[in-house]
Length: 140
Image (cartoon, rainbow, N blue to C red; front, side, top):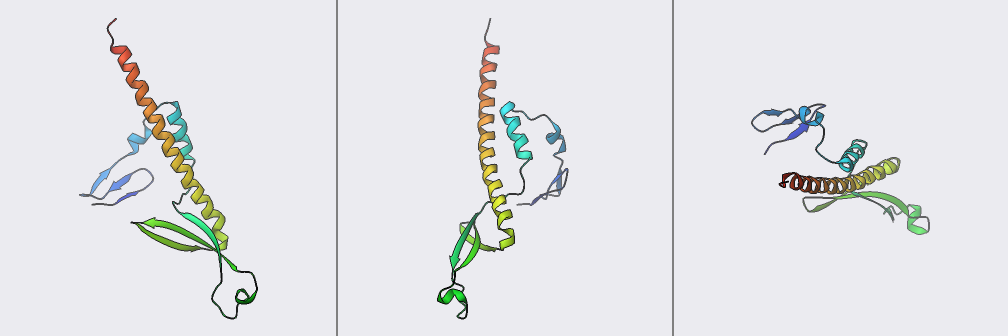
């Protein structure tokens, strides 16, 4: 199909070289209730996120001269795993990035919860609007 990439104020849709300006839609007041506006405000505060799992394992390194072969402590390794097109991928995470990667994964979990909360708020908004429309259309 095409590719979508964004700049600060526009999303460029590379299908037939069409440029779609989303700024007017973003500046409009969102059509939602107060719960939805609260969720949108929380979404705006999210940081970088990463849909993956971080696991810390302990294993022997395989070096015959290493201390872990005989009696020393086994090495600690942090691994990031994720699925792509049904295939599991694994990536080593250096010690200095473990905390930050764990934070990104936490942000992903918060994002998933916020998506569910926004969906619930929008369903409630539609139900409330439907009920108020029925009340106003009744003959007096």
